[in-house]
Length: 53
Image (tube, rainbow, N blue to C red):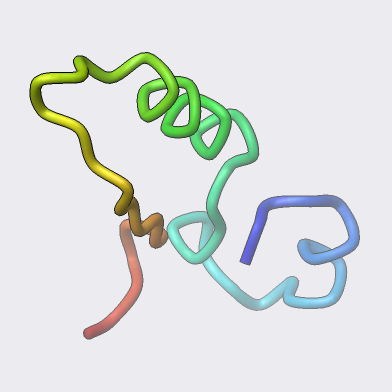
């Protein structure tokens, strides 16, 4: 879940690690946008740190 006030209210029992911060998403997109052409990737998977696999 993206960390927004609406999701925090809806899932108030979840810990902080359950949510992905919008700024972290933006940072990763910026990283993908500026990646070196010699090592290009079309893949990026963003998940919260505390997610169980």
